Image 1 (cartoon, rainbow, N blue to C red):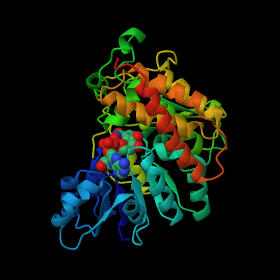
Image 2: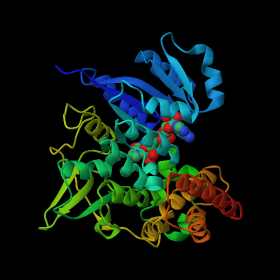
Image 3: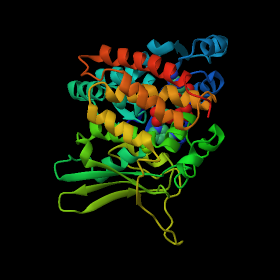
Image 4: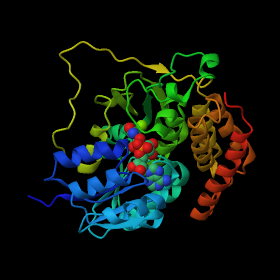
Length: 389
Ligand code: NAD
Ligand code: MG
């Protein structure tokens, strides 16, 4: 029997991280956790370090690191900050790095891991949205693989059988439509953070849950797919599928469509990415065909969900457009969750930020980081000028 694959898990205490730990517990013969990070949840991370006898952990938040300093189990080394995150990402013994931190904070460790030749199971989509060109270049340069772990992209990856997109006409990303799928624009304008945090199918972190409610999430995923599968925007479609069972389709040139199906749990995608090309029994029950059920599909409404339209426009504008879209969205979602702006101000903040900033071609990664920082400043000012609802 071969050695277990050694895994580093960045964002171990989040929704993806917690699901990944279930998979690691279920397959100790195939997967071994060697390092893990969290932002501020020191207690949970220390528990993970204890359970998996980790040599390396990292707390990116400085206060949390100080709080944890005296409680680290023997044999575990505590790293800190974004430098610590990058150190974890390039650990000598690691084979695969699961990037499950939230936001553009995922970009630097993703680049570091790929640069060191580590395979990256990429759940974090903001890294590809902000710096897709540079992420793909880093993978090409070192020969490391990016294993798509977002469920839609993992579905496409599975439909392609790990092969190329040469015979692909287009891909169709499915979207649940979120909790406000059938709501009028007027009703949506008054949505509260509590309502936006109630997703009908998926249990996820707060940022992506709001992104699903605005459908910015699907916009981010169109951009993510553009890089992962090297397809132009017009060959990446979106279909609303409220049950979240068919996780995306690949349409081949002859018109045949292939989909990947499983219940709405991220464990299917995470396990596929971590074990690829191997497979093992899943940790959640799959679709039950002994009971009747139906699957519905409908087109997305870009008028009620302007964030999806704006993401496409940012992608078509090219250059720094997607990085600006992402940064403005992160700022707007945080402001909405803190009750500083209303739900419809999320798209307004993104739109004004895209209008204000110059979306030129980035020369290098520094341009991406600078645009990200500048877009956050612009979006913060725009959000500040909006009313709470
Ligand atoms: P989450 O908020 O539940 O967890 C985020 C994790 O990252 C936590 O461990 C947290 O401690 C850490 N973190 C937070 N801020 C950080 C920072 N600034 N620097 C470093 N670490 C930080 O989020 P999640 O729902 O698990 O999502 C993680 C990523 O995966 C996101 O990019 C999301 O879009 C993507 N994703 C999530 C799901 C899902 O079902 N949750 C599905 C597909 C893709
Ligand atoms: Mg997804």
